[in-house]
Image 1 (cartoon, rainbow, N blue to C red):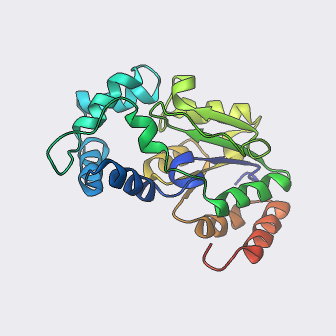
Image 2 (image 1 turned 120 degrees about the vertical axis):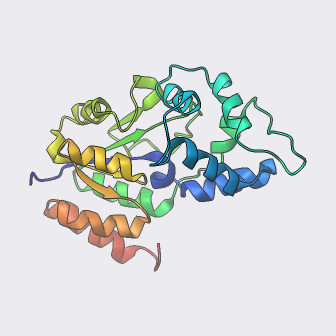
Amino acid sequence: MAEISGIVVDWGGVVTRSFAEGIAVWAADEGVDAAEFHAALGRLLGPAAVPGPVARQFHLVERGELPVSEFEGTLAALVRRSDGSHPVTEGLVERMFAPFTDEPAMVGLLRALRDAGLKVALLSNSWGHTYDRRGWEGLFDTVVISCEVGLRKPEPEIFRHTARLLDRRLEECVMVDDLGRNVRAARELGMAGVHHRTARETARALIPLLPPAGRQAVLDHLSAAPSGA
């Protein structure tokens, strides 16, 4: 196995609080049922989903090929409020992702790795929302947003594109993602893969993959982190 010197991380659910937590806040604000929304996404995008025109809209918006305003109508139609009405479509994507605040433990881990000399990239599938990039300076060597490059995970070329921007071979990179299909796709290309659940679990999973300086950075980060972080 090649020595890992490039760390590639997803945004929502990895650098930020979990997808479930962020959606729970949005759903409460909108007055909709979070469980209904997750179930709808599962039917459209889950492992047993049958490809269709609605699911295709998610892929199109992630590649920047569908206007966000049009996609918001699709999102709004997936759930209802308690009175039977649908959420307001205009601005829905921005409202949905507003609760996705950075996860301090994960941000701290990435800073420690970059300070140890590793390259760090953000690789995110986007539904067209505005990313709050405050604090990103000095955190990432490169940022790849699907709708800005016309590619989406798990398409192979977006992983290759990100590795090229890091000036690393795929075999020298690890993909950290909260979606198993993206981790599997990265591994099929020769990358290492870590299925993210918590910052602490991810840190421990990275240790055996990293060169000595990276391993020590992770160990130091873990020893300094609050219990449970």
